Each structure stands twice: as structure tokens, then as C-alpha cells.
Image (tube, rainbow, N blue to C red; front, top):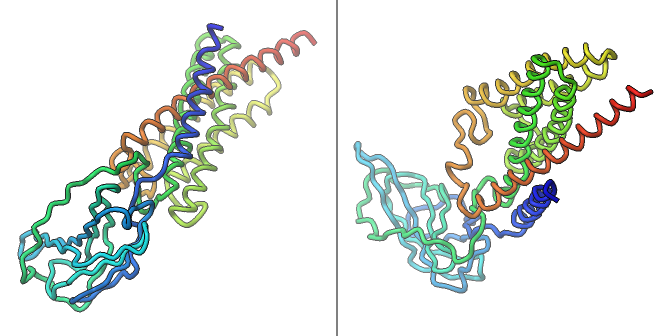
Length: 348
């Protein structure tokens, strides 16, 4: 029973993370506006929300135009003149747009008691206006950044509901890294001490690590299809991940092509050290010095910098821990199975 507690913990953590990642709702948000272009004068904007409560509570809509005019940063707020909510997620909002504003692009805000503060950047674009300081004074308002009444995952325009994949895709790669570290450590130990057990452990870690690498590629491909519009894009992080997968597949092929156990173990150990060095270069070094769409690589911000809030952390980190514990479980089973096979071969 002493060796079982962490296995129960692994399963319980995974079940918790899976249920929470699938059932936790997304925070209310503004999805879109009916038109992307407006003109000076009275303009009616159709605001489309998601999980909002426009009809159930008082809501104040605001537009923000900000830009640099004559060397000064100018912010001009416009408050909605009239709001007509047709249902919870749709509202017709009337704004009076002045002839002169500091920028052509307007951000849309909404403050409600239930949904908190909602924000849609670059919501509207102005046509037929004069750039410059507004002739009228800006509305004296303050966006209070209210929190939604219910806890939910953060909303990102590009990710939308696929933000849940963070709790699946990223833990796959964290787990793969853990297993490949176990593998390279055992390969080094084999070259130092020549113990067969280290060779079996290195092989077992790579086998399970390849499975998680493949799962990471699959979940990443689905994510790319939704966010980037294609199953695979020419991106250094994605290409590096695929090359890394092929390098470790070659490790498995190399082992299968050598019959002599001692020679196989030595060559596989040396190759495994090379493979891990390439993994670090392809997944951690090169993508940081090249332009990449992938979060946390190149000039793209990492998730923790813009949308890994406390609600998501309580699901993401348990998912990482759960998958790592399960991977160690599978790794131990794989090593035990290889030991049994080796024993049978020696006796036959």
C-alpha cells in the first residue's frame, strides 16, 4: 500500500484536472461588434457578448480613442448615450462620435455588476474624421476593472474556448521533458558504470517520452487549426518539435537494428545524449531567437504574462503534476516489462 498512494494521487489529480478543464466556463466577454467601421455623428453599434448578462443588469459601454498628438499622449473616452439589450448576449449601443479624435481605432469597454469589466481591443475603426485633439472634453469616467461574479477561465480573442487545451497540450511537453531528462541521466550512468539496469531505464523513459511527444504534437496541431487556421504552420517551435520527435524515433530504430546487447546499449547511450542536446537546442534555444507564433517564443508573450490567471492555475498545475505522475507510473511498468523480457531471453 505504501507504493500505491502516489498512483491514486496521480489518477485523482488527472480526473480533477480533466473535469475542471472541460466544465469550468469561460469568463464573460465581448465577442464582436456588428460593424467594424463607424463615422462621426450618432452611431448604433451592435455588441455581441458571450455568457454576458446585458439584459439582466445595468451596463455602461465606453469607447476609448488613444494616440499621440503633437508629442502628447491623448486619451478620449466616449460614453454610450443609449443602450438597448435585446437579450443577454446582444445589445444595441448608441454613441455620439465627434469629428476629431486622436486615433482611427477605438477600444470597447463594458462595465456591469454581474459580468465585471469586459474589453474588446480594436473594436471599431473610424472613417471620414479628422485626426487630432478632440474639440470636446473627454468623458470623466473610470474603468474599475470589476471581476465577474462567477469564476471562469480567462477570455482571449484568438483562443476563445480552446484555452482549455492549455491544460492538455502544455503538460504533454512538460512530461516529455521530464522523461527525456530521466533517459539521458540513465544513459550517462550507463556509460560510467556499465549497468544494464541503466540502459533499460533509459530505453523505458524514451519509449514513454515518445508517446507524450506524439500527444503534444497532436494536441498542438488541433490548437493550431483553430488559432492559426491550419493544422501545421511553418514555425520554428513546431518544426523543432517534429524534428525532436523524429530524432527520438531514430533512437528506437537504432536500438532495434543492433543485435549485440552491450554494443546496442553503448551506442544507444551516446546517441541519447546527442538527442537530448538537440532537444534543448530545437525546443528551448532556437525558437527564442527567431520569430515565432508560439507563446513564449520569439517576440510572443508566454501564457503566464497575459492569461494564466488564478482560476486557470488551479487546473493547469494539477494537470502537469498528474500527467507527470502517470508518466512515471508508465515508465516503471515499461522498465519492469523489459526486465522480464531480458530474463526470458537469458534463460532461453
